[in-house]
Image 1 (cartoon, helix red, strand yellow):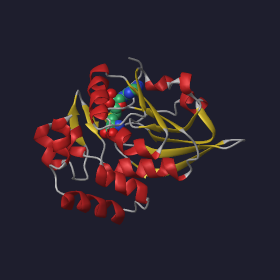
Image 2 (tube, rainbow, N blue to C red; image 1 turned 30 degrees about the vertical axis):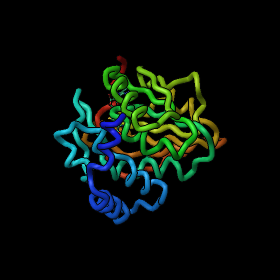
Image 3 (tube, rainbow, N blue to C red; image 1 turned 120 degrees about the vertical axis):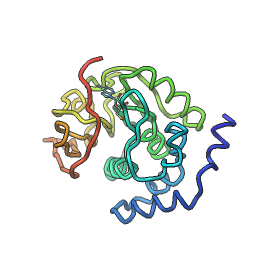
Length: 218
Ligand code: SAH
């Protein structure tokens, strides 16, 4: 606890403000999202050797072949998810280091998060606890399956790219709910937002992105 607490003051407010300004210039409007980008200590989600780069707007490696998402993309996905959000629960697929989880956590009531690499999940669970984040429930498993037990969800956010639309996630979306998900093969991924209307799923494209793949099976 004390080590993390000290770490929060480690990078200057000026560096964080610069990141927030950059995201505003790129079109992020939500005050709630911008203030989370300013407040969440991103340097505590990466290796110490990379901490000095934590407030650059880039993805960084977090080990085990995975990455921490670029702040702009985290902000964009969070903003898209919350724009239509009237509800309680969010399902997140691809917990990774938990940065997206931490940004989202005070903005929704409850987050259910699924990650396929147990070692990563273990570290992340501890990290979020040390940051006093308690409204998150964790599950090691295959995100293609979702997490039926606690569904349907008002929002679903996927932080790895699926080659095709995961049908089980659509089935776990509440009426009026939104799914934000990168779709497509490497090099041709598009960030998609799906809205669950009474008579159809509406799919909107939010532009090109680059994510690690949503792996099939364990
Ligand atoms: N959300 C993270 C980024 C995670 S990177 C952040 O905020 O920075 C994508 C994560 O998805 C990786 O941790 C990877 O292990 C996980 N992943 C890939 N395929 C998966 C699957 N089928 N089910 C669950 N998690 C998966």
